[in-house]
Image (cartoon, rainbow, N blue to C red; front, side, top):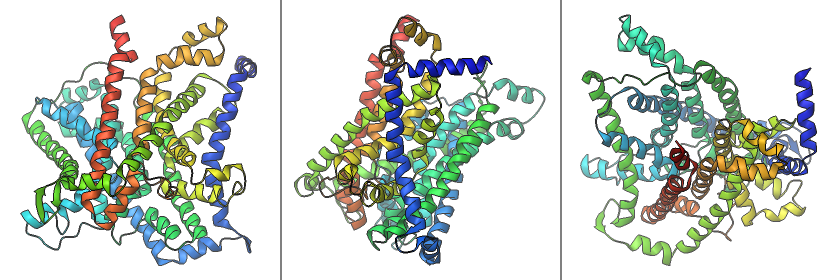
Length: 571
């Protein structure tokens, strides 16, 4: 009875707040129009024909295609391999950082750099490096090992590149998980005579198993949704993302591409639901709270030395792969003439409209970043602090974009806003405009910002906001003057993360960008496909400098103007 009365009171308060009601309506409209509607159009396209009506013929046709069946098999093989290898590498790095006493500060710096690089670089930079180091004209294969016919294209090329790209995600997830294990559990087993391996197998492993499954599924989803790496280094080894792209751009088969997109979406969505509602819940239930005290780090040299060497070698290899990109832009002809030159940078700006590409990319990403950050914080606030019937819908749909591959979303926007319900309506004008690119950037970055905002808001005592309400402030004033300042760090972090994700995005926008706009990532992809690695590396180098500079500025801003500094001063 008390719960029912409390819910009724919350609803009454909500209805008495027109700003809050308007915000909820606008949010639901936005999420429905730009996430659910394009996906619904894809589903309708795949089962409905103009002449035949409701039919499964389109699915029958695409499954009859050997190339499509092969693409599904290839995608799943790569996904499972990348998921397993990324989780193993992520666990290795996380275990060394949390459990092993490393005396060198150099190792800690390496870990930070490796975890940061995939965030600030375009998603296909490692594919360029792989070709330049291990391809037929590769420095390592051709000049060091004297191998002249080595091919990096295909399954192993995609797997290695995606593993090196995505394992830092597993490392960051598992590091937090291992830190939350109470060390007394493991030390009790050691005191009873168990070996380190036995402690890990019988105590640590069962505690982190749900988290490992969670990390595996996250990288599995990232891998099968990836478009850029398979496009550049896949060769004839087609995956679902590249097959869908070629079906719509090469075969001009929109219905077939829509059906293929639905198959890919079904796979990623199933994995996402398992990851979010089963494994995340199990992980939270297994590890509650934080470790009760500091962990006694392993100092045994038989453990520390080999683990440190292995992690250092892998980290240095990853850094070498990234360093290869700027050198690719400074050499005259990669693989043949290694004299230094700046001609590729000059050509970027003089011949290939580099200024326009950087301007368009920068301005569109800059426009989308504050919208994404503010929307993320508003959604987080509604999910954590307010009670209303549509709350579950807003949370689920805003996080759904995490499970939707960029290629699928791109086709959904084409079908939805060119030929769909709004094909001749007021929203049809957004296709080919800056608005649709900004909307895609917002939708793709929304889940990351929302998760960050929810975590930050759950740490704020409800009584702080309630006292503001009691003094007569409305919801907008409370959010702007009380809540937002308290989560300023998360807001700023979400702002820069949205900017970086937008300026380095490719899979969602490659089908939507028109000749009116030049985007850096599309240019990099185009020149890499042509084999013009000097130009591609020059574009990629400047992009990395822009994104890394943005992250550094954000960290500097938070350090001097964020809430953390003020709290330290108060303490």
